[in-house]
Image (cartoon, rainbow, N blue to C red):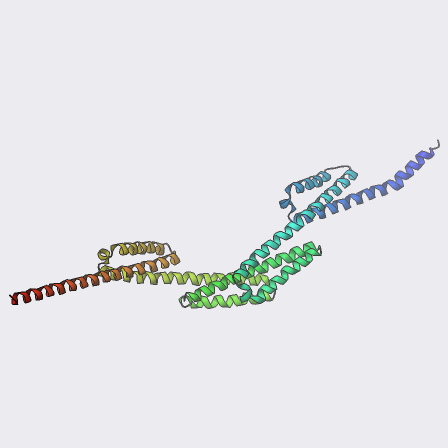
Length: 331
C-alpha cells in the first residue's frame, strides 16, 4: 500500500522542521527570561519596589505568572511584557533614586560648609566634590550602575569628612575651655589619629579613613568627658568654699533670699554630679558659687550700711550733747 504524498510531506516536516521550531521556541523563551531577569534586577537595584510598590507588584505578577505557564509561546510573551513593565519602572525610579542620593550628599555638604569646613578643610571638601560631580556626569551619560557606585563613594567621603570635622570641632572646644591639660595623652592621641584619617582619605583608603575618623572623635569625646568630670569636681569645691564663707558671715539670715537660691542650685548640682552629668553639674556649681558670693557681698553691704547708720547716729548724739552743754554754759 502506497503512502499518500501529503502524509510523506507531513512526516518529513515533523522529522526535520519540528525540532528546529521547538529549538527556536526554547531560544525565544530563554531570551525573554534573561531579558525579564535583567530588567527586574535593574528596577530592584534602584529600589523600584520601594518607590513604586504598585507598579513593582504588577510587573512581578507577570514575571511569576510566566514561570507557571506550560505554553512556551505564552510564557515568552508574558515574560516580554514583564520585562517592558520593569523597564518602564526603571525609567520612573532611576531619576528619583539619583535625586535622593544627591540630596543625601548635599545635606552633609551643606552642614560642613555652614560650620566652615570649606575654609578649614578646603582640599578635603574639593576631593569629595569631585567624586560627587563624577557621579552626576555618569548619570547624565546613562551609565547608571557606575553612577550609583560613584554616588555611594561620594556620600561615603562626605560622611567621613563630617565625622572628622566633628572631631576637629571637639578639639577646638577642648582648647577653648582650657581642658587639654586634664587628659593630655588622650588629647594628643586624638590629633594623631585625626591626621592619619585625613592621610588615608586623600590616599583613597576610605575604610581606614572611616575607622580613624571614628577613633579620633571617640578620643576627643573621652577628653571632654574626663575634663568635665574633673572640672565639675573643681567647681563643686569652689562652690562649697563660698557656701561655708557665706555661712560664716550669716548670709543665710542677712541675705536669706540670695542664699536660698545659691543653696538650692548647689544641692541640685551635687545631685547632677552624683548622676555623672558633669557638664550640667559644673555649670550649676558656677551659678551657685556666684550666688553665694552675691549673698556675701549683700551681707557686707548691709553691714556697712548698718555701721554707717550707727556712726551717723553716734555723731548726731555727740552733736546733741555739744549743743546741750553749750546751752547750759550760756545760762
